[in-house]
Length: 586
Ligand SMILES: Cc1cc2nc3c(=O)[nH]c(=O)nc-3n(C[C@H](O)[C@H](O)[C@H](O)COP(=O)(O)OP(=O)(O)OC[C@H]3O[C@@H](n4cnc5c(N)ncnc54)[C@H](O)[C@@H]3O)c2cc1C
Image 1 (cartoon, rainbow, N blue to C red):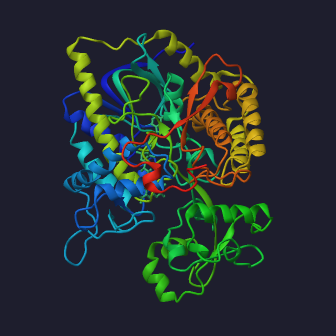
Image 2 (cartoon, rainbow, N blue to C red):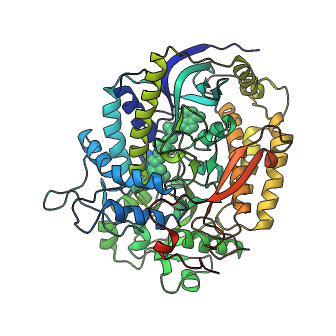
């Protein structure tokens, strides 16, 4: 039986090194507590944040018509009325300050002729209110955050995979366990507060824009510790991920490809959007286009490589060069000239709308001392996040949770409280973590992962129905109980062993996918990012509800371990009647 290799005591442990984790760590450290940040990937190079493209919403001060209230209404209505309005209020009121903070920290936003920030208007936003840095707003943001981080006393541990939260006898956070990806060391963190910033779970699908390791670790750890997670059936799809040429597979195909006039064709050369949306054609909403492409696949109309064509060849070449310079250059670099040839695209998982149920300080409503920020927090975006609303969200949630975590740590320190790590939890976790390395024979984690990815794409992705979801639930039950306990890593090394990492990722991958499928099964309507072929209409009378999932460790199968409950949406400022939602009356 392996031993604990290292025990690290810290006041605040931040898990995840995308934008939200970095912000929370900087903020907590400002208040004089010891902060450790553990990242599964590399700080600032993992997760979605560096890949973010278009902009950051929250700049209301230039347009006298705009206000936090307008941004509030846009966010709630864009989220199909599932947002937690108390959280949205905090978010929209503090987003402008977050943008100013980023400028202070060295981020440079594009300017207008008059020297003010150049503002973009994204879909669902009533006014132009998003600052940007060309089509690399996320990397500009990370540049500012990292510059700030290196000047703070935060201790950063790269390539440390946090696997479990430790909960003390009072039901409060006491720390976490982790394994080092570099050398397989087993680490125990003792902490007075833990901030989960592990991003979303897009990687449970075969093609995703999200960071390589975003399989829902934060949601999984929170649920196992006793926290509720909400709105998991709401996963946003982006229709134009590059599928071919293969050198760019999975790269985000900019929205501008369609807004500049790009056309979609199936393998027969049919411009299929004429059939699905004669009015909007290729500029229909992201979810609608994703569904249209998926329908083409179901009808056997995919190309022989498995995508659909996106063609710009009817657009004057100089327009392509001027308006789509990055796309033109990137695709040219792998041998396709988009001025004269089509390329292939397909829908990709983009954003997880749901997350851990939190209060306005982004602390779990169920576990004192546990915080969730950025894409790991639930509630703000309801059923559908508006473009450019996530980067300001990670600023606001990171700052608030960082402050709250440091206040809690200071209070516990003053009271002389020491985190009491439950040894039985540590021992059990060590056994689980090292088991795939020690099995003599068994199932390959990569093979199980790939079968699971196919299952998710087939039954839980863009278009769902009760029969398919039921099938997915049954198959995931079997994968969890019959196959996962037999997973074996072929090479027993603990050093840079990515097969081992994949084996460990199977736990959050299967568990959270099952939670998503069960939530989708319960919601017998279509709304926002959730589409049921057997319930195609939105049902405001019965379904102004959020679906929460909780963990029951005593249950026998995975689908029984995950309990789903529908509860009414939290309304504080805008009622469904005031918003004029259709179909409320009998
Ligand atoms: C292509 C693309 C374009 C986008 N464009 C925009 C845009 O223009 N505007 C906008 O507002 N939003 C945009 N988004 C969304 C936005 O980028 C993300 O929602 C946001 O950056 C999420 O930040 P985060 O810090 O919560 O998570 P991430 O940035 O995903 O970071 C997650 C971190 O957690 C770490 N991690 C995961 N599991 C563990 C574990 N077990 N232990 C330790 N560490 C762990 C990862 O290594 C990573 O460091 C875009 C997203 C994509 C993919």
